[in-house]
Length: 354
Image 1 (cartoon, rainbow, N blue to C red):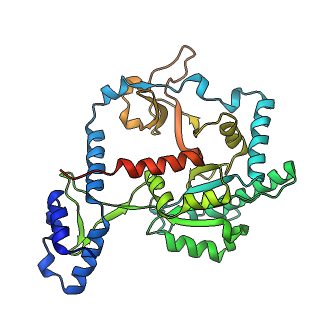
Image 2 (tube, rainbow, N blue to C red; image 1 turned 60 degrees about the vertical axis):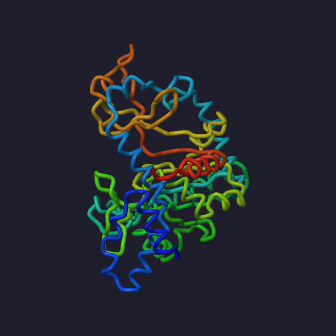
């Protein structure tokens, strides 16, 4: 446990000394618990993340517009315009990878079903199908089905490890639910739960909030926390031990998801694409969905609120929206990319308070 003087110095350096304003009102046990929590927080890192978030909020949207470019034509394909033989080649490549145990699925399932009107994890939600199946069940059964398809093509019974990223509020409930339902036919050894990280909550002045006299207010660190969580919980090591090369990542609330879609996987494998995104065309310029594009030559998802109306309405000579690649949180990664990304996140956050 860190010493009080050390914590005081760290908080002072990071302009967060107010966190100890109730210190003298705490009993000995409460002080111990609080010191333990404070010692676990990398204040230099989280302050840096807050500053970056603030900077992005104040960035001039018009200046961002001038840096945007659509995804180059040679960097994407559409199922609507690809020859059926080419699609079959992608599909065959994807099924072969599945049969060889090279594919994993990473499900982002940290959210509660609050906006769906329930107080349990989204994955447990039933959307009202006649079968009564939950999102978890639907997606687990699709994993089983694509394994069967791979066997039909190759004669080999492959495995797909299902990695499920939960959060503090959803982890135990999700684990109990899956166990109770026997993992919907999947092997328990091929279902791995791990928790995304937590970050302190800030006010608009950059001060960390308390949710009690001896407790810092925390919240899940979002989808971007995937890189750090993969490393911290040994998931990358588990992937390496299993010989996994390719990872399909998607969010739990996509009921139409083609889990481990062999065409998508095969396409990315054939193109040797470290990172891929499956997108849908925007229904219109004002649709509230982010777009995949390039910013300063780098691929990025830019939220609809970050693009001016004029840019959102740009159309090409055929009348199609220039920025139409709607992001639906449906991604592909090479294992090597995830490993590199997780290492890069760690290095980029090695900062000091000032």
